Length: 152
Image (cartoon, rainbow, N blue to C red):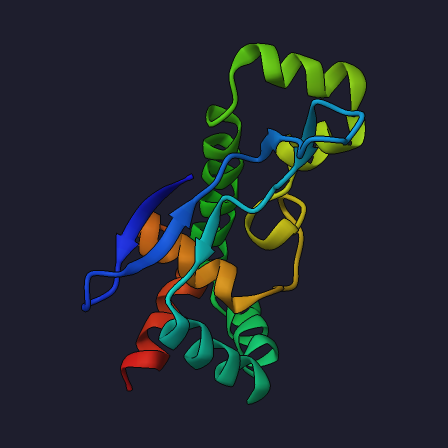
């Protein structure tokens, strides 16, 4: 885990985590899944994004995305690069272990994009994940829209 971005106060705002982490002691398996790569950690940002979700902005942004072909293309590219980035966080040995021993984890790691949505899928989940991805990588149109909503 490392800090990807910091808030204006200098506190961690977004962190990067590996998609597979070492299991806690006492667990039979050597690894456990942790597929969300970018996590929003700033309490103020979490609260603000939660308020947007409570106001129905997931549905509103889904509708906006459905109507904007350029944003759809950008979103698909962001989801592809997110999955690629997630895979790059694993060693080849660990990725092979996951593929051999936990194929369902492997599918999530290689095939899902931001917020766990399958590549090419429609619908949005968790504006926090989109916003964190945008803060860390600047490639997510949904996260950019959240950023702008928070600045208004």
